[in-house]
Length: 152
Image (tube, rainbow, N blue to C red):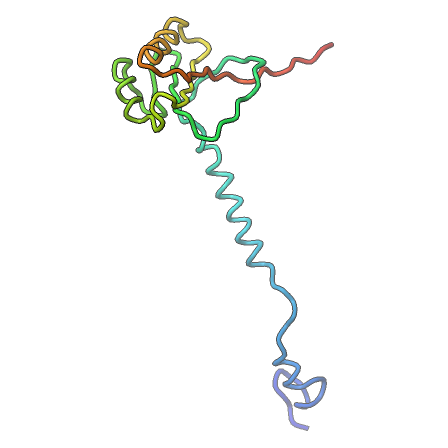
């Protein structure tokens, strides 16, 4: 008896070469799982980077979150009084001209003011006064939702 391919004793025995040439009906999911895990890791790493880049310690309130179709412009005021337009530090006298140039919908553009809870109240009002005097009417203050305290 002559030896066959892959140790089989006969070409016709146990399906022979025809059984080896039949397509497999099993689906190999290993590459799919690998791709999904890579995408999961990528999204886990990039998700925290998608938030506004200026770290501000916002005050807490009971106000509900507002829903908006378009992303608003964000003005942040840090504890030391530094003003940021989106993620770029800016002087107060440069704020209105830049906002006017950036505003896509003119003076109807939504603007969020994010003030650190330890910043001087007068500084926040000064920024809001400049925006109001320039004609911007859709100004909102951003806060953190209040954490519920446990009742004993």
